[in-house]
Length: 225
Length: 235
Image (cartoon, rainbow over all chains, first blue to last red; front, top):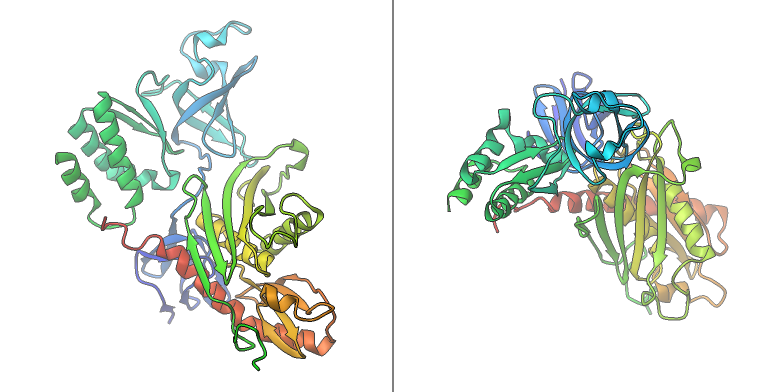
C-alpha cells in the first residue's frame, strides 16, 4: 500500500516527493520515478484517491483545439490574418473563416480586421508542431470594439470564470460590465470607465488569491462595498 | 587561527536567502543571495524564437544569459558586460539546466533566462544557476527537479565549501575552486569546472562533501518557491 506525503490542495515544487507506492497514479504535473511520484511543476496538488494531479501556478498559454480565446491582429497576409494569441505560437485566420461574407482574394482585408484589432475567436485545430487554425465565425465570435483589454495569468482563467461562469457573472451583475475572458489570458471588459476599473481590481484579486478557499464570498463582499 | 577568514567551518556555506516572484512582469523570476553574492533571474517564455534557423521542430530550446552589473564587483576584477567570460558562463549555465527542463511541448519556441548579478563576491555562476532554476520553476516550466549549485575548494590542504572572494585570493597562485551543479534526485552532475590544481582523490572527496550542501540548497529553493503563496489573503 502506498503512502501519500502531501495534503490535498498543497502547493508543491519540482522534485518534491508526493507519494510512494506502485498503486499511486501520476497525473498532470507529476511523474513516476520507480516507487515514487514526483512533482514536475510548481503547482497545487489535488489528491483524488490514488491519483495525483498538479494545477500549475504559472505558465504561458498553449493553444488547444476548441478553446475560445482573444487574439490580436499581428499581420495581414494575402490569404488571411496572422493573429497573436499571447502564446509562443501565432494563429492563422484564413479568409473563409473570417466572415459570413464572401471575401474576394486580393480585396482590402483591413475592412474586416485591421492591424492591432482584438477579436474573440475559436481554435479549430492545432497540429503537433503547433500550427494553429482559428475561426471568427460562430456564436459570440467577433471583433471586440470599445472597452479595454487586459492580460491575466492564463493558468488562473478557469478560476476567473468559475464553475459554469459563476465567478465572472458575479462581477458582470455587480458592475453592469460586459466581460469576456479568453482561455489564453487576454480579457476584454466593457462598461462605464469607473466600473471597468472596479472589474479589473476584482479580476486582479481573484488572480492573486486563486488558490485560496472562500474566494467567491470575498469577491461578493468587495463588490458590494 | 581559524582556517577560514570569516570563521566558517569547512563544510559551512555562507548565509543563503532565496525569494521567488521578484520581477512581476516576467513569467517567472527569483533572487538568490549567498553571502555577498546576489543573482536575480527572470524567465520569459516559451515564446517565439528568432532567428528561425535556431528553431528546433522537436522541442523548445533553453537560452540563458549571464551578466554582471557594472557596479557588482569590486570595480577591478571583471569588467561587467559582454565578455568571453560571460559568454562561457551563459553557455555552461544553459548546459547545467537543460537536463531537467522538459520543453517537448513547445516545438520551435525558446525559453529565455536572464541572469543578472547585482553583487559578486565569488561563486556567481553557482548563484546564477540557483536563481535560474528557481525562476524556471516559478514560470511553470516542467522540470524533473531543481538544480542547486555551489563551489568546493581547497584552502591549506583542506577541502572547504563555498569559497568567498577573499578565500579565492588567499593563495598566491590560485585557490583551487570547483563549481558543481547537481540534479538532487539522481545525484547527476550537470556542471563541473575546475580552477587550479587538485589531486584525483581530492576531487572525489570534494564531490562527496558538496552533495550534502546541494541537497540543502534544493530544499531551500523549493521552500522559497512556495513561500510567495503563503498569507496572500491577509492584506
